[in-house]
Length: 285
Length: 57
Image 1 (spheres, rainbow over the protein chains, first blue to last red):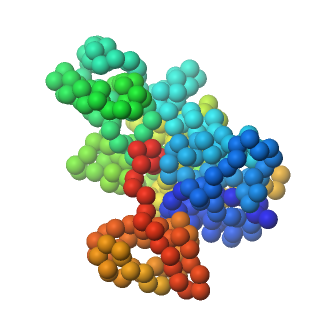
Image 2: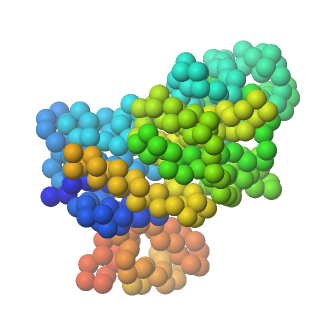
Image 3: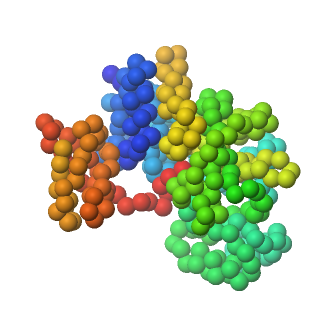
């Protein structure tokens, strides 16, 4: 019987390495493709063929989120938990928690209609960064430079059928170097940090968009902020994103389902082994 | 292991250590496939899912 199950829906480099490292650490690891595994959610007790401890590694946010809810309800321990995935996967909820807990984060407003969103952007001062509240890989994030751009982008957003696209999450455009910072926080400790440099043709730094990873040794102030950020969302294995400003660091995202190939190459640290080492601690408790 | 691309007929090389769920691409047309199973050196592929709006970190 497996001691830990990695649930996935697309076996990326990360899942494969996690599986291999788990085995190297002597763990009995199984892989479960949840696309092919419907669950009877009225049945009680842990699910056959899925270990009590589960590492949630789906590429789809909603699949992972709801599968976690089901497995937790049936008695499994899921890393990261359903609630952590819910809070990290939603930028509005993440920002609320960061701000409430005194963690510096970019000034952010949320507007609930196109007209009020434009008025709010004017109040904030252009450029303003418009982000979907649930989204990834930097998709549909727009730097809105003026009123005219705001109107055309928001008119397009109004036409989208997903009602969440009409919740307008507006963030100040932070003046920063052409990079941001990603910290990998595992079980309350910063395991490694890297710079993510924006590519020549984009202001976004996502590695998935062509951003390049570089070495960084974080100072204690940054490490403390990252640890606290992971703590307030209740996540055990996360990527915390920070920016450098004239006033100090700001935290702008906490990623519950981190991709770490670029960070592994840049830092030369075995992130997968560290994650599976933590999972082993849970399993053997 | 080799498989044929359903779109263009090119040979797709599947690594020996591939696991079900892994993605392989056709070297000619770029179409992505998901490994379904590997039994006795024979690999079964299906078309991979398109990128979803909620995919990624």
